[in-house]
Length: 141
Image (cartoon, rainbow, N blue to C red):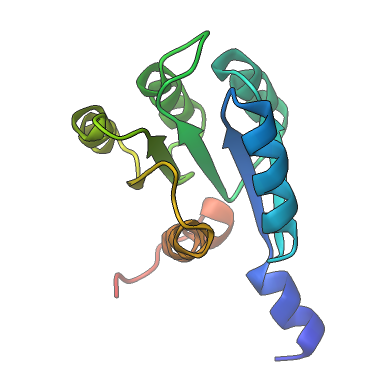
């Protein structure tokens, strides 16, 4: 595989949904250095609007936001793009709610503040499980 093709295969287009603007800005900058292109949404309703017009390899979704609960947003994401893996971020003490997210189709969850490399690894792992292009059948590993 050529270096350019390798770069393309490792590139991830991510939707990051969190109402903490400073956190989103720092995380987006740090992820860009790791070949993850971040589109930020600072509310659940903004994330839904963005997903209507763009396609993403994965989403990272904060559980607690001002305008909408993360579980509500997750349910809508799963209707709009059932194959897109969604990783939930939750504060300490909200693990029960995060497990509820798994029941509604979230790929996994991490507790905030999470280690950047752990998050990047989880995103790449989630994207590796997504069927390329969303068509055709693939044997399970």
